[in-house]
Image (cartoon, rainbow, N blue to C red; front, side, top):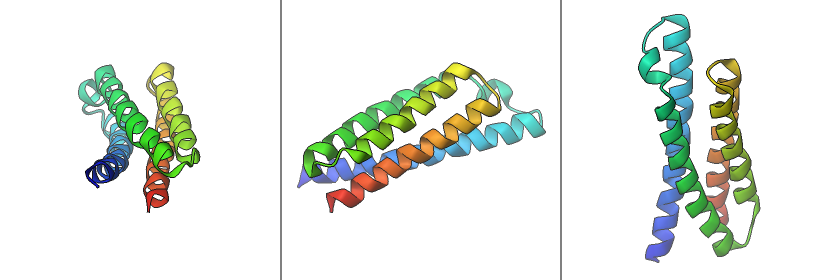
Length: 121
């Protein structure tokens, strides 16, 4: 029972982290692109690297355990594609391509966590 609660919390944390990442991306485009503010903080490479590492850790643990628990691989595959897009966003550098890849990636990661939670019940 305690393991299930931890897995559910990790999936919920993955959804929250995905939302925060998307918010960061949209606010970064708005503040830097339209207002010319906050570029040194919002566009700092370390922010993106740390976010990706957190997403990888939470995703691998919760989505991996989900496969073991409910036997469905789809959430893991969806999450892996999302994480790959997020990693690709770091590789392309700042700009529209990065924003699009990141937003699609985090949406897929969030969807994977939601599917994982639904499969668990």
